[in-house]
Length: 98
Image (cartoon, rainbow, N blue to C red):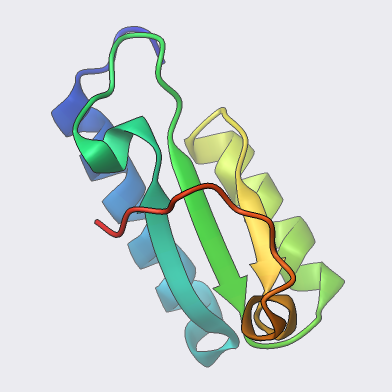
C-alpha cells in the first residue's frame, strides 16, 4: 500500500464498507475505520484498520469478510462479533470513527 495517499486509503475503506453493507445487509451492526487513516495521520507505510461488528456468530460471514479484505485491502482486518462488543469483552485500543 506504499503507493497510496491518505485520500486513496479513505476511499478504499469507504468502498469496502459500502460493499460489506450491500452484501451482508442487516447481518452487519457497524463498520468502523480506526488507526492512522481515521486520525488523518497515515503515511506510505500505513495499513487500513477496519473493525467490522456482525450481529450474529456466523463463521461463513467471517470467512467471506476476511477474503474480501485480503482481495481489496491486502492488509489485516479485525472482525468481532456483536455479542462480544456488547459484553465489553473486547480489548481494543482507542477507536476513532470516520
